[in-house]
Amino acid sequence: MRVRALSALALRWLWWIVAIVVVLYAIGRPVQLVWQSHYRGDREPWLQLIGPYSVQLHWQSREPQQSVVRYGLASTPLQRQQREESAVTEHRLQLTCLEPATRYDYQIDAGPRYSFTTAPLPTDRQPLRFWIQGDPGRYVAETAAVNRAAWHWMAQQPLPQRQSQSLFDLWFTTGDNAYPSGKQLDFQRHLFEPYTELLPTVGYWPTYGNHDARRFSFYRLFDFPDQAELGGVPSASEHYYSFDYGMVHWVMLDSHSLLFSVTMGLQGWLDRDLAANRQRWTVVLFHHPPYTRGSHDSDSVTDSRGRMVRARQQIVPILERHGVDLVLSGHSHLYERSHLMAGHYGSSHTFEPATHWLDSRSPYVKAADQRGSLYLVVGASYDLANGPLDHPAMAVATRERGSLVVDADYQQLTGHYIGIDGEVVDQFVLQKPLPSP
Ligand SMILES: [Fe+2]
Image 1 (cartoon, helix red, strand yellow):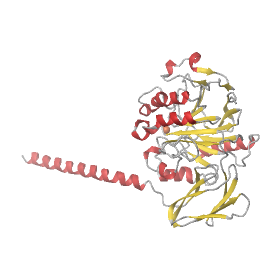
Image 2 (cartoon, helix red, strand yellow):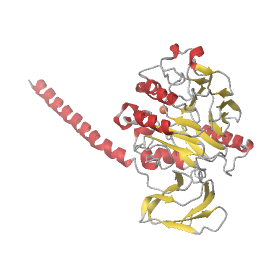
Image 3 (tube, protein in one colour):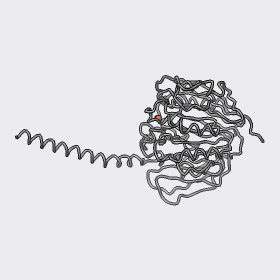
Image 4 (cartoon, helix red, strand yellow):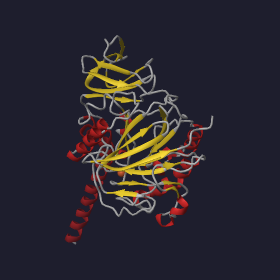
């Protein structure tokens, strides 16, 4: 009897301990998530929403401050100024009434003087250069070496007739920007601290990856043009939006939330946006690749909860309908690239080169109907993973760290994948006929 009573008591105690642990976790988890959405410290400015006539400056101060930003044409006295309306720690200030494709200097309070160049007009045909990092979310020696290699290559290979003085015009990522969890401290360590010279001077367009989705920091740190502030069709959601930069139309999609209601309107908006698009080139970025056999498998309905299958079945047909030129993804920590292709929505074993490849040799030339896209997986700017690299659609597949440089002029779109040692691992050219007058 005594033993039975003791075990009943122990069981009751155990039940209480489990209940307390569950309650503490239930309370503590949201508190932890909210807490990790903040970072109390100084941050140098980062450029958002850079357009022909305006730019939005974000920066952060440890203590609340009401700052003054002085700005003006580069290398001239900073005669214009804007004062914040109140003292805050998370600062956002838009500089307006700027001129397109023009270099400006700015200074926040008594801080350093920085420069940036506004976007060219959508009608401007000047050549442009873009830098794309793949899953760069941990800043280690290899990441730094990949960056240095690409910057060195760009400095050595300037784009003829490009007018901007900066090394490249915009800076993109293919997602997973701050490992492991996309919390404020991760962004601090792997973005804000190592990139203090770049963030204040070049427009930064990060794609939303699955690791960014683990916390709430991403959409708190970055603002995106959901009201078509920089061209395109208003999306009313920062999870999918577009903008024009010179002659290139950029579309940025959140493929992580494809499973959830936050992206329910994505497909309808994407169709409308691309139908309205008249830009010379169209590039689409989203994290989960529709075609990969790298460290992820786009055939698998369980890998990444089927997001790659969904991307292929739900997004790719819309992109193809409107003749998108380039589709950039990450997630697989390797490099893969297709030929010019269209019409493949199934598993890799259903891929038929004779049917799905429209042109199998660079320079790829689009027919007058604009059909066909190049698909790239750029996911190895930091980590390098293993994988079979045998997707039949991916004509180039290599296990090499690097980042992508995309050059656009009116005649052609050119890509160079620059490896960690500075060598050109892959290059391609895409051309299309001139539009009829
Ligand atoms: Fe990922």
